[in-house]
Length: 193
Image (cartoon, rainbow, N blue to C red; front, side):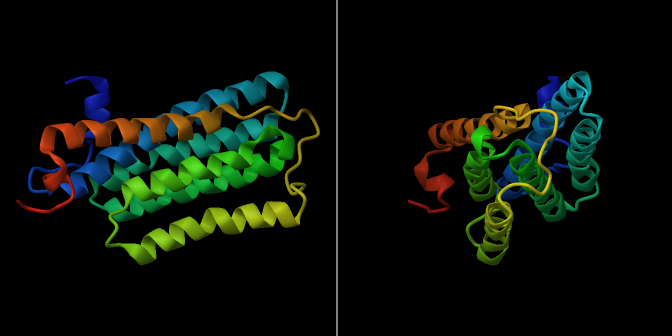
């Protein structure tokens, strides 16, 4: 078993259905990739002398690791929600920190894709709540002219953290393509022939 497979399978039991197993895998992968990106971004902030942002970013990295114990203890929906809310909050902070010119606000779209991939469409209320949080936070940044956490040291041209959302969205799309090829469209959609 590779390290990536080990990370992806934490908390999955044999009796779980395909939908729940997929949610756990995606949440674990999202948490691990987020951890790495936040960690390296935090180290970068420490190197440029922005200690406060370094501490905030490393804190977000540690928050990403919490998906593993939650999934291990079978709090799967909570782990998923916690990971997505944490990343949405991080986007809110870094959008305000970096300003409009950084384009960080654009990474709310991959977060929306992650929400749509992780949740089952039967959970409409849960999905709606997770879609609303980034929209509300984006509105707050717009209303405050992105000056809540404005940087006095530098304006970054996109945080490395944002690349984790792009990578994770790409990974989810790739996994969905491989599932549809191996299982067939009818099984993936839950329909029977």
